[in-house]
Amino acid sequence: MASLSKQGSAMLSNFLSVVGGSDQNLSESEFAGTWEVRDSKDNLFEITLFGSGTAEANRAGEGMSGTWTVEGPREGATAVISWETGWTTKITHTAAGYVKTAYDQAAATPANTSVAHKVD
Image (cartoon, rainbow, N blue to C red; front, side, top):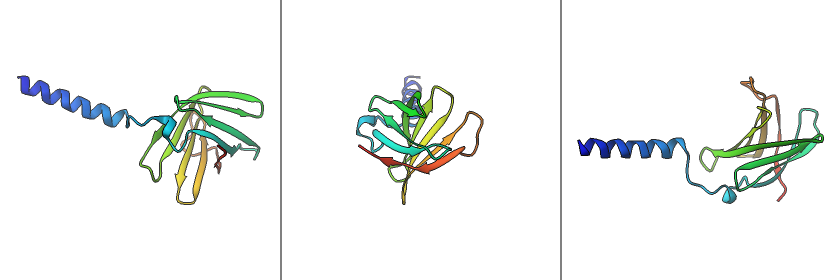
């Protein structure tokens, strides 16, 4: 019986490490910092990803707040930003550089895509 309990505990630990992602410190992530991106009207704005896992942006005078995490392997990694508005923004590391995509609450495809440049 104790053996089953240990196996169950080990399985739960493995499951949580997969679901919860790595213990990577977001402040050490390539994505932490400020990014210049464009909105659907081609207006430039900045998104700041803090090492604490919070995010802020000021698009067209609209203050935006949210949280972010990193998904995927180093090559092809994506910062996934969940805004309080319900929108999701992703900044993805591609072979050609970084790309920003934005999704509204119901979108399966991006509502907007632009190049993303890290400014700090």
